[in-house]
Length: 291
Length: 134
Image (cartoon, rainbow over all chains, first blue to last red; front, side, top):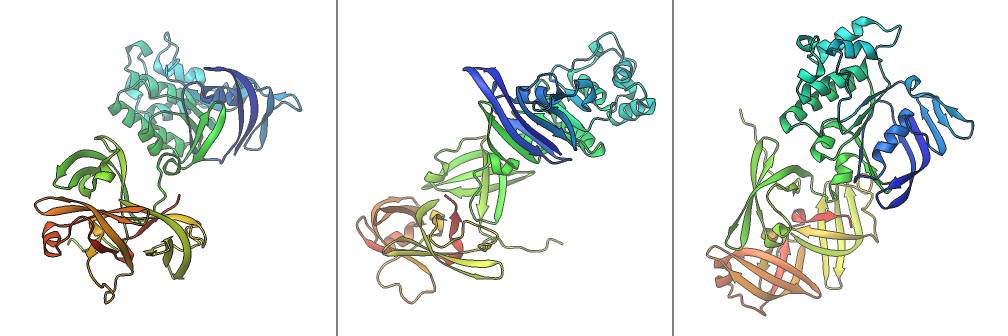
């Protein structure tokens, strides 16, 4: 478990800002920090990794104290057992893919770990290439593999996928989920992409001006989902057509297209592309066997 | 979606189901059956203010006495406006301070001779009512 209780004065977008957090993250969770630029998300990761020091507070990870302002404990970043992946890859340009990974390996580390990661991240064919010859998605796979060679307990991801196009992004999300599970990591992601947050994380902290203003599962945080209907799906509006006094709304729910008759009051704030909940009572649907 | 606000005055629970009675105004008591209990949905508490939601297309409109029917939700209304389509018509209804919309067949509007200012009962089945936390 990560217990983070810290205070740190920061230069916020509107002058001085106090980053003031008291959060707990259970082992094995995939957590997202969400919020506007300058809310304190990156600073939180930097404080957790030891790259930035809090003025007051305590950081405890899996029973070990990493930082405690009261007793002046402050573990060095390299001893904090953290993997850190940034948006801009931060690979060594003069080293090959494999050398980049070996560089991250601790002195007594097992070289087999590098081979395993090259295989898992499908980098074997690229292992002798230099980073400059790789695509963005490939570079980020290398960066992720390098962050994992030291077998971190905590993986920090600072918008790792935001520079990549949608298709590569989805693929890399699969890699992230895979390594999160395989290495039993506690992962903290910074992301602005709600689809990505839904896919990856089981807990979200929303930061505003250095404070957590909301937290919960992605559904609890992003959906005003408080109605009692039990036949309920999330989807995306594809089309809205007027028919007499009603509207026919076409909604994509996973791979199925459904249609909903809506009244004017329901479509008032709807536009194509909106994420919506389609809900009905559990009493309405009919059910029958299809074979 | 029609949305009326009121206070929960009674909750009857059996197994997974509850019938929740919501007093919207002196004249209007609405009931909803939900697959929830006060344990699964903590907002189900007598005295809590809650929203009752129902779809415009699920409203039945009747004139005259409507006593001999199984419907649990009968709201006395006055029609404030009718927008007539070829097949369907939209009725704007008023009950006390609240407004309800009903979408019914245009044929029924003609058959029942409904016009603005007609007195009607808006009726909704127990199982078409949803509840929403405020």
